[in-house]
Image (cartoon, rainbow, N blue to C red; front, top):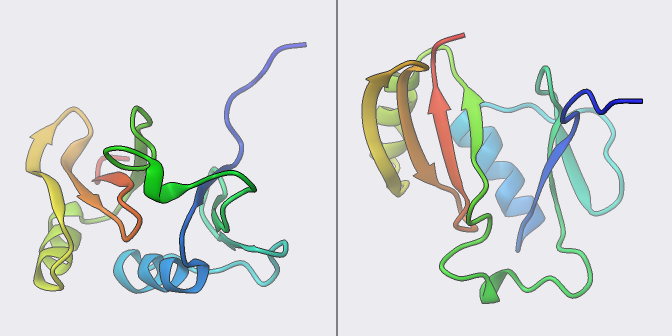
Length: 123
């Protein structure tokens, strides 16, 4: 029996409602109609993405320099440049300015909890 790859991703966040609103408002993600207690699952494909309250013993404020250090979280967008400009206009912290590479137009930003999220537009 072999592992076929990741099939669910979740970030632990300080304020679930605020973080879910951030991803809905700024990235256009849509919630699934039902989520487990303490979590919000979005309708993303091919891999479901969720936000959840921290597990017992997890202190996001102690994560240095930020949560998720060493993890690469990438999202596909139909138009990365447009999304970049929209995030900049609302004051979202940009970690890596847009550049053209093997994954199309690519940039990275920091979400409300300090996770670095990369967006690209090549399918």
